[in-house]
Length: 279
Image 1: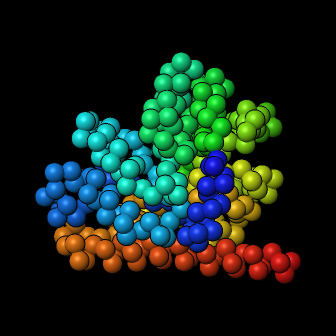
Image 2: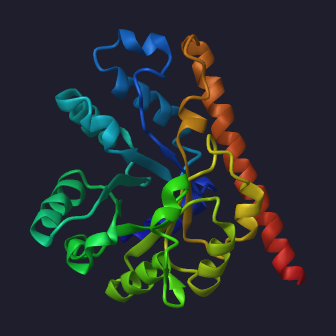
């Protein structure tokens, strides 16, 4: 089963386009988790237990695990093992290097850790992406238009009649022989998302910027002309419980946050569908 098939199957089953970012910071999780030998894994495991029926999958940012060295890699492996097989596992690594190095990254993240998708930076060109594309059942999410304030430094540079990010998209799509190239669009770029998905409704999108970054979810959904998207929320869900909460308080806080986001997305998708049918 390739990424797109897995995505459609889990969205249909769980009625959710949400992926939760397991970007676990020991300084922000409830203090009662710190009593465990491996607090990062125990926290992640609990998040997964609470949310697994209400999400499309999980995104793991490698920085939060690599900074903990051996303990972090152990937590990463255990977390991946705890995620049910029918849910998406997205590696947020933003790698991009020459082909022999890229091959080693592909071996690590796709072959060894068995992620379904990975975020990549295409600045070094086709050969830095090609080793990942050889894994035909996987998807690479290439950075297109990100949600951070610094995106204007390069992504919106004018190059002739287009922006640099548009050139990256155009060339990246030409590399995709197995429809396994997708893109990262920040949720704040609704006009650009509208334009892109109107022309490319089947290209997978990973959309960060909902939740802690407070972008407008209703506006985002109204500009999405695609069923091949996932919306990432990290801090808005995993830190919805206060640091002083006990185990009995933690679970309802997290459950409420994921249900609110899931239900809002579905409500706006339905409204958008009805609006399109009437026009």
